[in-house]
Image 1 (cartoon, rainbow, N blue to C red):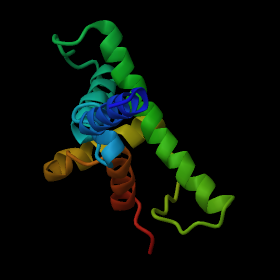
Image 2 (spheres, one colour):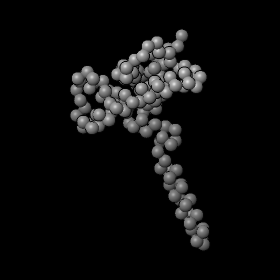
Image 3 (cartoon, rainbow, N blue to C red):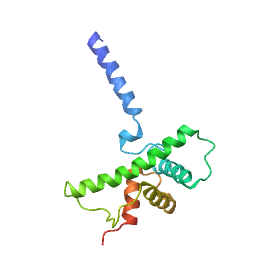
Image 4 (cartoon, one colour):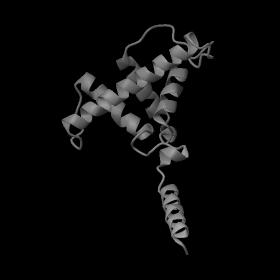
Length: 141
């Protein structure tokens, strides 16, 4: 095998290795406990516990708990506002029909309740679950 053949073989082997090791997200699935419902439940649970003065997770340090809270509140408001932009500015169909402006904390509570009521969906993407929670809480009539 010549030099070119050897290089091609190495490149092909590397490409196969990369494909075999591709993360779940690249394959269209969330990464478990990173951007799925289990992670969202942990993150929103931390935000709600903090707001309510509840117990903290002794397995997670202060920085991790802060990151969890920020992740939850950022995701729920991001999904909410993206939906509003898609409807108001781009003529998209309303998936949910809120009749009032609500706080990020209330959004987190709506999502947390939805996750507790639908544990069979926790393997889904976090953003899908947030949208489903809002659709459930604010149905269009």
